Amino acid sequence: MQLIFDGGGTKWIEEFSKEHKMTPLSQSLKSSGVIAGVCDYCDTSFGGEKDLLKKEELPLFDEYKGHSSIARLFADGYQTITL
Image 1 (tube, helix red, strand yellow):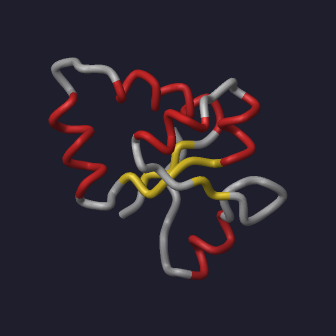
Image 2 (tube, helix red, strand yellow):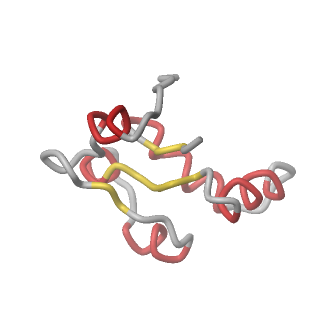
């Protein structure tokens, strides 16, 4: 299972970086590798901060015209759920 922040969802990275009652859960997801990274194009489009991504150690995906590759995920056997 992988979670890739895409679209407007990239704005949640800033919220997850703050201290709150969900911090242990978000840290657990990140350290276990469930949070795989962030769409580069979407992060830029929605005003994300690259320095924050570096601080949070979240990789950027830019495999297809700046976006993460859904085709790669399907080829690797993943199914997608979009929220």
